[in-house]
Length: 57
Image 1 (cartoon, rainbow, N blue to C red):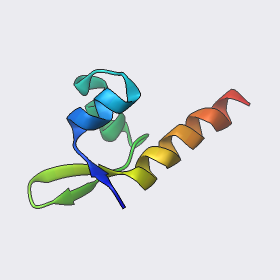
Image 2: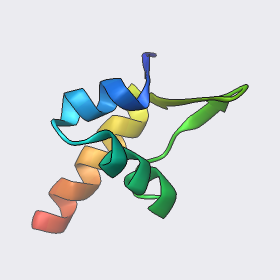
Image 3: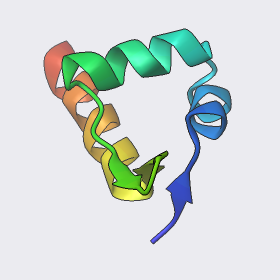
């Protein structure tokens, strides 16, 4: 399992860092906390993208 930083996820999704934090705040994108560090796993990313695809259909 891969875990990404907020900055890496922003780059992967081609969105801004603030948007990633907004998605985390609203619960649309899940994450884990390791100490003070926030990480988004590849499973979290896959679930987020699947939820976007489900909304479109």
